[in-house]
Image 1: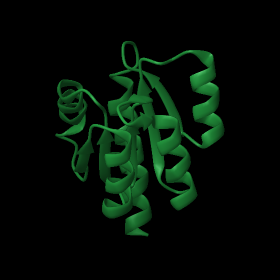
Image 2: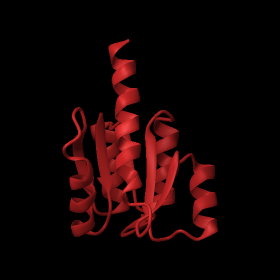
Image 3: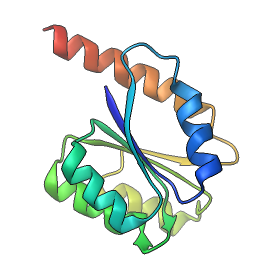
Image 4: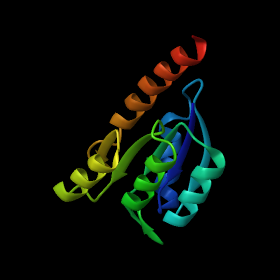
Length: 127
């Protein structure tokens, strides 16, 4: 399963990547730090999963999410952000995010989500 991490903090990007780097079949194919970079990398790399921050340089993650879903409605998007106010959750869900996680409280939950998605992906590929 191919993952792209779009997060403006390089320290946090590396922490996210380390969270699931030991999972078999999971490959981080790209990492970006701003919204425009994310859009370009998603179009070029065609990841299966995008881990996306909402508050990013050069735009916002909601705009990136909307663009992702217009291009590939099957791409799974995990919004991982500090911007957890109900309007952000609502807009993310309406735009098609499959998961909405708070960086400060749900970070470890992301590993389980990636593992389950990878298991599902492997079943599909083997079918």
